[in-house]
Amino acid sequence: MATTMIVLLILLIILAGWGISIYNRLVSTRNQVSNQFANIDVILKQRADQIPQLVTVVEKSMEHETALFTSLSNARQNYFNARNVNEKIAASNEMDKALKSLVAIAENYPTLISGEQFTQLQIALSEVEDKIAQRREGFNDATTEYNTAIQMFPDSIFANIFGFATLPLLEISESEKKYDGIQFKS
Image (cartoon, rainbow, N blue to C red; front, top):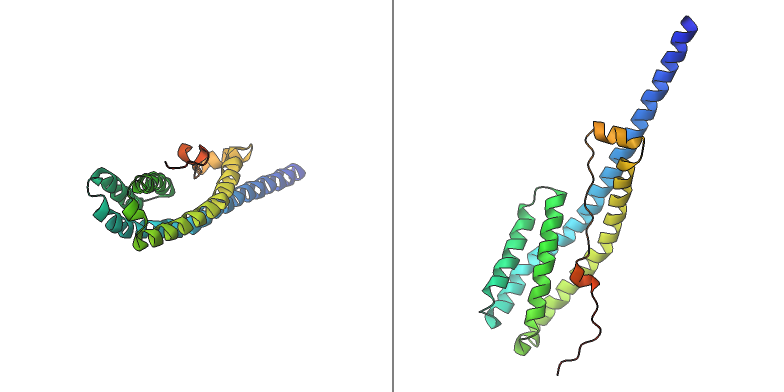
């Protein structure tokens, strides 16, 4: 009888240790996702901070494009008001779409494009976008690892018990995926 109790106690200790190990691994992968997003968040804030300057320069030349400026301003505000990673990702995607629209429309204003302020802002924005693209890869890798970990058996059992939920990836928009070749203006 004592041997059975000792064996059961040892099995219980092994199971508890195994459960703790799984929980700690899930926490570690979730924290890696948070760390990767924090790296992106710094750059996203930098991009959001550049928007007022860009709008000021462009607004003077494109006064009738108020809907676009409103959209860009709202996207920026949504980013700053976001309370969690999911909201920040959604706001970032919204900001990305609005910025691309602004740059596309700005191409119809030759005096604006040739202006030094606009050119400098466009270069700065391009540099920020490059940094975001670089860091997006690390974030998506960490997020995929985390999402896979919480979906695999037996980790999924502990993930469900402790409320680990899947996280979204920073996705590339359909417009970024599309390539129409080099376009020459006539």
